[in-house]
Length: 186
Image (cartoon, rainbow, N blue to C red; front, side, top):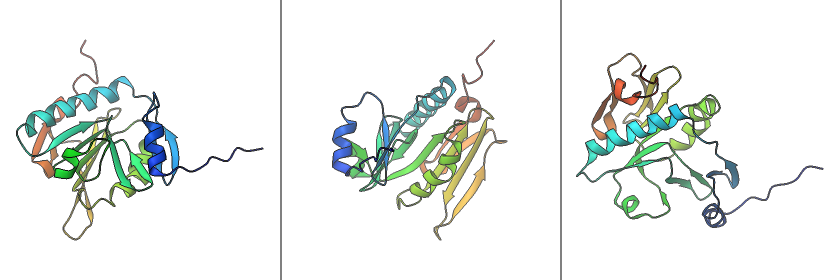
């Protein structure tokens, strides 16, 4: 006999999640456990967070890393690896942001297909989102998707460039700094 999982409301999820030692994403009322990050995954997140925070210091924008929730709808809450918001309401929020300008996901073999398809489809619903960047620390690839004025998304492959261009927040990060520590120094 299969167990039927009860769907939660947003308020039930937020109260429950606050009591959990691990993080969970919430999509269409269902709860999904998140897998712990690997060293190279965490390394790239740390590098990006540091570089973006340095660039945005003193501006009206803030950078958030893996532990901050993003509420996309009344039944969907995700944890982007890195996001930047310049929205005043977000900067006063306590539990979840709602209007990021930039979202970055660091890919892993187990999440790559989801990050490229369903998760990107969810993120595209955010009117505030101007840019979505995918970073693959295994292959050292960087691909950005930028919203065009006609609400289409343009792919910008930065894998062969010297810089990762976060055009939405006016920040460039050398790829060597994005991937610093991914391949440990001899």
